[in-house]
Image (cartoon, rainbow, N blue to C red; front, side):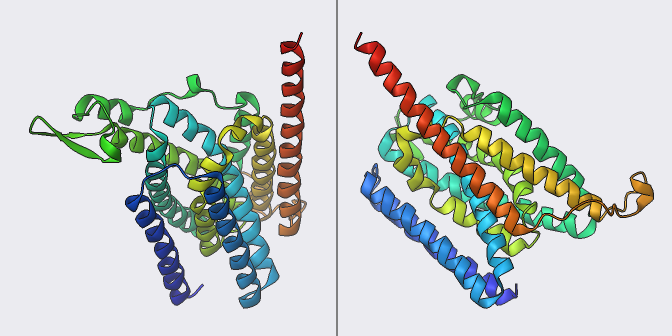
Length: 330
């Protein structure tokens, strides 16, 4: 993409973030289901329109790559919401301030992922063998997803930065109206909101380690990688409030994501074999039998896997609720 396309995209996305910041800064609140639904629908529609724009200005293949990458990142973002719920509960963040925490966390995620994307694109352009590393990492992550199941509150461990901030920073006892700092007895203190933001930010960093290799398995176009990540993150705040208690019903989401990440990991390894130049693999020659996985097939596999995981989760949750009601009525 040309420089002016990047500039226009960054300005437009920056304007959307600014509007979000102004809305939250003016009136911190817990959004209603209707408000959250409208915003989520708006961002999904915006992503769909953006893909159509890519189709009209470039080609269908580019648009399909964007949609596949966006869908992958969006599904991983939904999984991230489990951990966000745990963090909010652990730090007892009042509902009306959670929007602010999530938005700042999203801004931090965009900045960090932008750095990862730039680094990943530079590595791929210089070293094709990095696909072996990305692919192996995604397969390893997929295995962990199969093993761990849904994140539980006891699974969340405060990292070194969070523990340091609790010890080293002067922290007030309450959230002080959602402010980051408050003056008590003539002394300037940070509110617990800062510690929550550190927890969200460091968690975003860990999530990026999964999501960036995954989308590079879909497309190596930095513009598509960046925009797919942005559109996946932009509606995350509203999706958090929209799903709410529904998150615990997605019991098979991790299994679905494991299949998706495993598929992309294998796809990356196959592409690395097809472009192989490592001397200790096939004598440094390309591996001719390694098949190319077309982007349309990736989209079908990812969409189908997530659809099956979602439907199976809802059926299982409904069955469990009926069983619980039957046992309670005895």
